[in-house]
Image 1 (cartoon, rainbow, N blue to C red):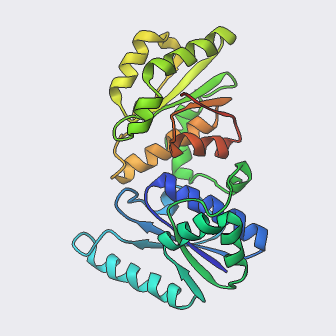
Image 2 (image 1 turned 120 degrees about the vertical axis):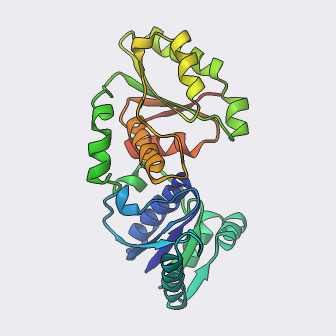
Image 3 (image 1 turned 60 degrees about the vertical axis):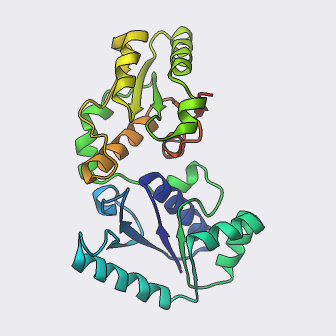
Length: 271
């Protein structure tokens, strides 16, 4: 049995979840997912996905916010950790990867029949096969339906990460995205673009530099990764990116990378 406790934001959780699924499948192990509602990802797994493995929903939002859920969640996690033959914190997982690579980590998992891992990143090499199990919740499909219908065979997904991502801002500037998008239009006049961004100003600037009728936005999306609604909308944008023919993504952004795996489509990093 492999018990995975994916940590941090939605993107990081999906890195851990997809890789744990791949390792469990490879080793023919049962996979248990300890899904935490926490700062940066305060949403239940069931509000995002229909998962084919057992999922235990817990809260780590603190005593002051959710006293009952906080104590109950802590009790459940400790119980599963004590019942495992080995428990690895995030730092220990990263150290094994650093010293011995993914193969070394998989050897540890293989040699431990019942192991509990916390991870804020992948535990094996990722590819599209790691996400074949991922199915959106019915409520997500319904909420995103109008947007998804706009994504066609000629749609290029564009993810422009701004706000606090210093590297993406510096290495994937907006002017370069415009250049790449104009190149796509020159190659195929039927091309349109679904643009996902965490900066409302980017949308206005793109409307000035790219034909407005070629731009698709999730106009009702909430840009707030600390709210449940914002996280659901972020996942809807991730799914929309995955349903085009390719993705133009931001430098070193998990949010650009994951849709390429989910949709098994090419990712071209704008850099």
